[in-house]
Amino acid sequence: MTDTKNINKKDQLAEYIGDSMEHPLVMIFTAKWHSHSDIVEIIAEKIMAADDKIRLIIIDADVDEDLFGVYNISSIPAAIIIKNKQMIKKINGTFSKKMILDCI
Image (cartoon, rainbow, N blue to C red; front, side):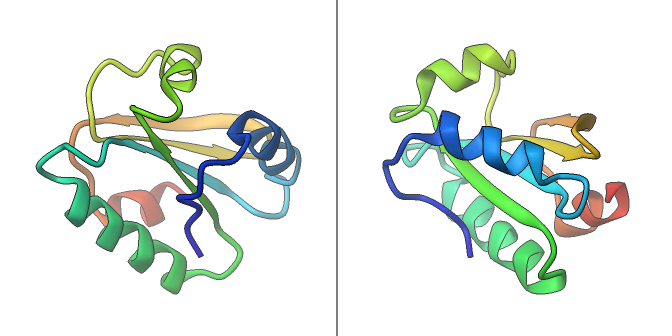
């Protein structure tokens, strides 16, 4: 299930990154006001449905602005895939379920 609640995402990311040896992490950067936000949410749900080992977190520009700086995100949507505690792919711009799953 995707996480879109306003919680401390830094703590959650630290936990998810630590678990990325067993559970790959997909970080999706978006904003509710962005024209593709609905599509990004659908893609996120499809990614989660495709593999129950994947952890996915949605980072909203208006709620989690500091995380955009930490990960040097300059455009939305964007995605970062972390596996074995390492960033294996950063996608700036639109992406598909297949693009994400192919990286994992």
